[in-house]
Length: 150
Image (cartoon, rainbow, N blue to C red; front, top):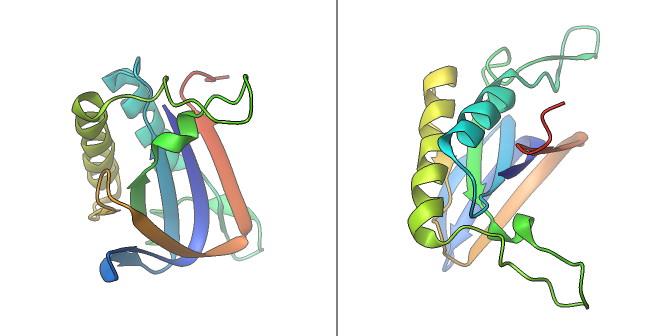
């Protein structure tokens, strides 16, 4: 499982010209689920997401978590994070989980983050053609892969 976390001052998801979700200060999290991912990957990444200290303290040092700053989370499924570009120029998505596996793990990730933050996690629409807008703050962008736990 791979996630991309962006610290934002605002982010939104639109589908077919209609606003689906939006947040203010917080994190936009792009969530990619691999075919061999398990609940263990979800649990580890949920804890990492909520505990990640990427928000500034009074001294301007990134020392606060999303809960410390009362921030919001917008989670958007993105199978293209699992793209393989080893051969040729056309990415392969063979490693991405299918709908039947990815949806339950994505929903579990969102529920766990909700439980840890005490706030609803805003979502995109799984499998839809989404338009995601964000104002990256910093910019701060962090990539975390559950296969790399050092």
